[in-house]
Length: 193
Image 1 (spheres, rainbow, N blue to C red):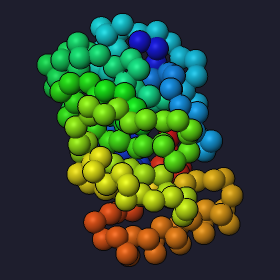
Image 2: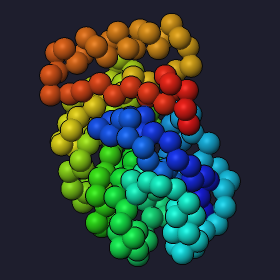
Image 3: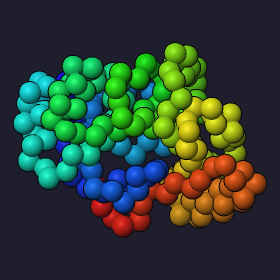
Image 4: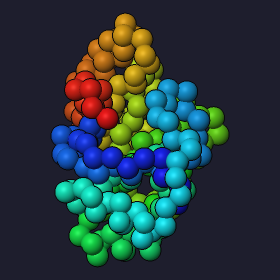
């Protein structure tokens, strides 16, 4: 596996916001989203055993696989070894590829609104949560069947005035769609990785 970084922090988004987690950021992605703020290029090669050893330095058994796109490299054999070692496994995916078996928590963040010709993998079952990047102009409702918990996350454009407008639109949209929840990127608010 090629892994960009492994680090210990707090989950900043979705249902587990605020929970300590070990993040495994895989290198590589099958999409090129225009707003992506993640450096997932480069990285180091790991065997499954080397990854298990690297994870042993952290006091936490809650893992979040992210990227890039974890489904490009994550294998059932690794998932089985991690479960045997007592880890709870969460994964953040764009939903374009088949989910690995036995994942404890899957968050789908579809990027169809931003990347041309993107198709969600048709065989995936409903995820634990769906988290839609919200610009104020897209329609999150078309993704509501992808996850049990439903979140919109205001798009961070890097422009504070535009971001403020998107957040205002998100609040108004949520008031009209009470099945959905707001997910903020709290890691950016509290300035942690």
